[in-house]
Image (cartoon, rainbow, N blue to C red):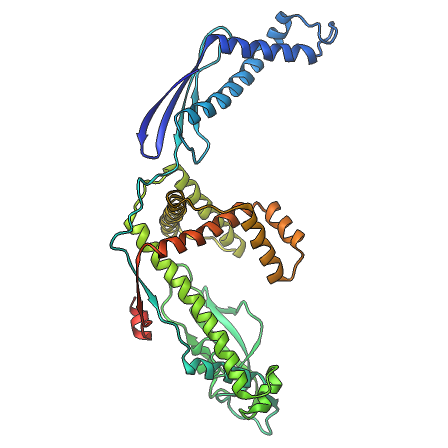
Length: 431
C-alpha cells in the first residue's frame, strides 16, 4: 500500500491510497475461498461449487465486499501512518475494484484541531469575594415563617390584601379571545414574591368574583399569545403569621433557637453563593481563554451539531402543538444553533488541547470514584448508577467532565486572577 496526504486546511485533509495489484488479488482469492466453503448452489455439493459458477452468481457482491474491507483497513493504516486524527467518518471517493488491478481510493477527512501552544499571556479574570447579605437571611426566615402561617376564614367578605391567601383563576388572550390558561386554579399570597409581581399586584383590592386584565408587556415573535392575562379572584382567606421566635425555629426546623436557624440559613445561602460565583468565574475564565486561543473547527462536525440542535428544538415545538415558527424565526434558530455549535466545539477541543499540552488525563479509578460519589449523593446503589451511565453512553461524557475540572484548575494557575467585590444590582444589570 502507498498513501499520500494533501492538506486542504488545518482541519481538513485528502488522503489518497493505492492498494497493490497483488494485495487486491490475494483479498479476492480469500473472499472466494471463504464463499466456496459455505455457498449452497443447486446441483453441487457444498464446498464443490466451481469458481466460474461463483463468479457468475456472486461476482459483483464479492468485489463490493472486498472493496469495502480494503477501504476500511487501508484507510486506518494510512491515517496512522501520517498521524492524522479524524473527528468524524471520512467521505470516501473510491473507484471500482478489479480483481487483477491496483485499487485506488481517496478520502476527505476532518481532523482534530490542534494548537501549537496555549496563549496564557495577558489573561486577567476577576474572582468575586463572596458574602451573605443579611437581607437574604431575613427573606428566607420570612419565607419559613410565611409557610407556617395559620390560614383562617374571614368573618365577612372583603377585598384581597397583601399577605392574604388568594385563590385565582387565569385566562390568556389568544387569537382575539380569552382562552383557558395552561395552569389550573391556584392559591397565591400577594407580597410574598412567589408569583409574577404583576399578578400579585393585580389581585390586591379585588373581591371574590372580580377580575382584572394584566398586561405583561410587549409581545415577542415567539410568544405573542402569552403577554396578557385575565385574573379572576375566586377565594380570599386571611393568614396569621406566627411570632418570629425560638418556637418558630422548633416548628420549621430541627433547631432549638432562632439564632441557630438563621445561622444554618446563612450557611446554605453561602454555599449557593460560592457555587454561583465558581460557575461565573469558570465561565469568564473559559471565555477569556477561548478569545485568546481561536481554533479552526471542522465545518462538517459543526454543521451536524447545529442540525441536531435544530431538530431537537423543532421536536419540542411540535410537541407543544401549533404551526411552529415562521421562516424568519427558523432562520433565527439556525443562526443561533450554528453559533452555539461553534462555541461548544471550540470549548471541547480547547479543553482537549490544554489537557494534551499539560499532560492531564482522567484515570479509570477517578471515574469509578465519581460514580461512587454520585451513588452516595443520590442514595442509590452503585451498580444501578454504573449501569445507567453505561447503557446511556454517558461514561465518556462523565470522563470529559472530570477532565474539564482538571483543565479549569490548571488554567486558573496560569492566568492572573484579581479579587473584586461583586457588582451591585445596577452594575450587574448593565453587563
